[in-house]
Image 1 (tube, helix red, strand yellow):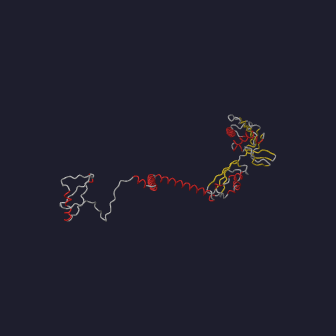
Image 2: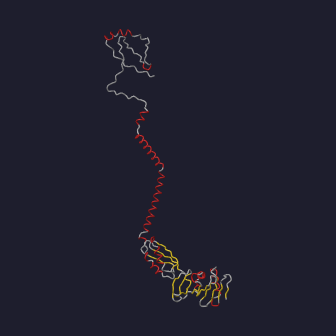
Image 3: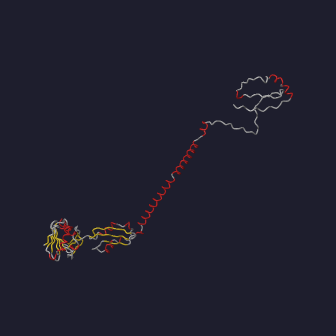
Length: 339
């Protein structure tokens, strides 16, 4: 327990006052005698005695603070209940908001590389999309309009006629060429079996056609009709054309005999096909060819193994020309019979 500092002494009273207070001093106990006090130990104050025994004793009083002195605030322990009452919803909200901001700042700091990588990918994707959109926009614009039509594969047909039939596509952007209109224009040419369109930027449209291969003429009421292996009528004339064989097929173009004859004619080499002046077939197994000039017959038989039969016929004709031969029998390509 810290002992309190001694209080300031009262001023010495005048002599006449000291004489009046003498009886009171006489009643005081001796200095050496202990005085019992009922005050607590920490509030007890030892009395001080003046060296002058005759000085009157004035009761002590608490010191009066100076007028200008301000009382010091008394430190008190925090009251948890009061602090809880003073903290409101706004303070809690501000604290939570500050915490969220700090958390977001930390997240941004630790994910800066990931965000940069993401920006790079997004930028690359956006560039590709813009490039694709720009390319499509240019392709569908008049900058890539058709200015030239090229026909490839025409042998019996005139390329200029086919290009003229497709002139309606001039000026159309290459991706917007109307295929249905092209088909409608090419249907007028029966010799065209198949076709394909090819765009060559910036201004060329290529038409690749495959012509039908005529195999001969069939005599009808209207004259002589040129047909291909599928029986499609290509043209009709009053008299047979030179260099085209006449077909004598039992059952017409819809029979199996005609299908076999057509397959045989398509398998012949160009040099031998040019010599054929007539084809006869009553069944699919008795196809016979007639070579003009020498009236030499070629007994072919069925359409099976036509490629091997064509090779065997070409070899035997080279060894023994048709001028010295009445007939070639290649129905069995491994054993050709020459008469």
